[in-house]
Image (tube, rainbow, N blue to C red; front, side, top):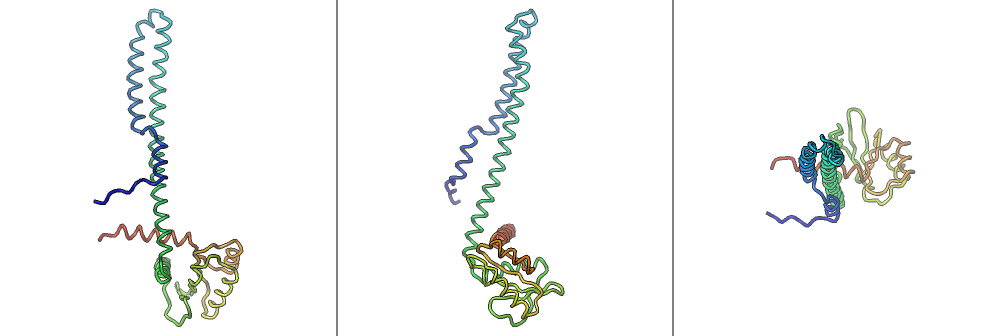
Length: 222
């Protein structure tokens, strides 16, 4: 069995954050209830004969045996909830980092296969026909769209690139455009895409699809 790798700085910070374990809160609550209950019973006889100190101690123990354990129980439950939430967040961050690294290693063909397979779940099917360059013509029912993937490695998507994609779609009688870009898509490009009815597949969406494909593959039996 391979040895577990050392904790990351983020994991160490989470562990340091919880100096008291949740189960210790519950144990302290039980001890406090038993201890204060015993004190209340011990001070009860003296309190009945008018001893002021015993009466005060008895009253404090009666109130404390309810409030103090309750506060410790709430702290324990809150700590357990925080631990579970932080662990889920760590797992999500690991998955995002793994997907981001894997996306950088994908070839153009692997990237297009990923997008094509995902679009197939939405009802799109490739259309056999002469499409130049890296474009792929897809069809869903009676609608044809042009999948443009040549900009997936571009650092920035420019509005002019969207216009050229629309022109190529018009030449093959496609009614819409799906354009892939793994770089930055600024506000002008997004506005131009909305204006021309272009569907953008950005880096965030590709990471989401890649994470889902990895999860699905991990659940499949060998």
